[in-house]
Length: 366
Length: 79
Image (tube, rainbow over all chains, first blue to last red; front, side, top):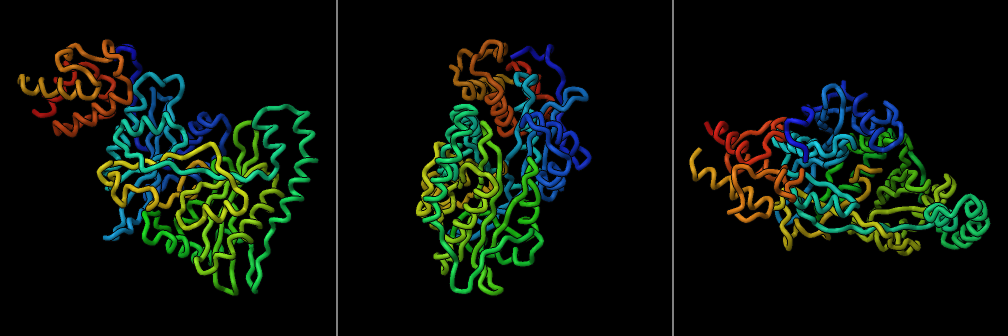
């Protein structure tokens, strides 16, 4: 650690909407990909302080670090149902040139103060990096548990060729066996019957409100994000990489019986990933899960996905739903962390992962 | 600075970085404590605010890197 005298003076300040170009630059540097202004505006909720708080670290005029909170309401629906204002911690980044200069503690310290000023009762986050999870626990976060990821290969041979970097020849040879795999998967196709339909809808569709209601009903008896239609529309307005979110509804007449949100993302080695952010089905219409998943898989395959990922943190039987479609356990897990620890003590209902509901829709990465 | 306050700060530093209390002096800091990394330093700052009821500006964090600097801050902060 350099001596204090040799360090540049770092200043931290809360971000405002006027800082969106700076935030865009920082996120582009973090991701190694240029991010567009509109995508950053959408993903950071226009820096609306009612929904999103961020702090930027500066070395002189140069922005060198960032941390942020998405403001949410969590329903703790146990013996004494209550709602808590929460911040979902995201976008922690310090420029490589400034990693040994105490920028990180200054940012997190500023965020902790901002949390108190905003009246937030807790912070929570999820990470798949074990070292980050360890660091958070040293900071006083409680590890509530690890959430498994399920995956379904859609183009298994191209997936392996890309993941293992087998080269252009392997990728060029993959389409034939992948087509045979696809053909075999057609036996898994399920159609929706009984006058019910599955359709893609835009974010503005009025029936989104019914889907949101289903999501909130699903959270009954659990610790879950309390969604509103406005929050839903803000969350799924746009992703950082500009890929659109796709929303499907299952309905019978005007009645919404379920739905799903997914998008495509490019992950390591160019693997095209269909990310199933959420899947919600009216419990009385469980038979709709398979046709809905079948529809999503076909759509993702059509859009060039190599694999589908699903975060199995929704204890409503969704894990079984995807397993029955052939999803298997992925190597990754997500560590769910909460601060302060006292709120989620181990061996209490609030500190038990099975009582939490956490999907990719609750996470910021996709 | 009272001896008691200094001892409380030394104890907090010892607890934060996993040190023997006797080894913590006014000169103790990241230069001579291997475990004094940015994460632990942040915990120390949060502990100081909580235990001594002082307010630390984020910009002060990089300067509070010896027990002496910390005791000066706590003394000033507590009036």
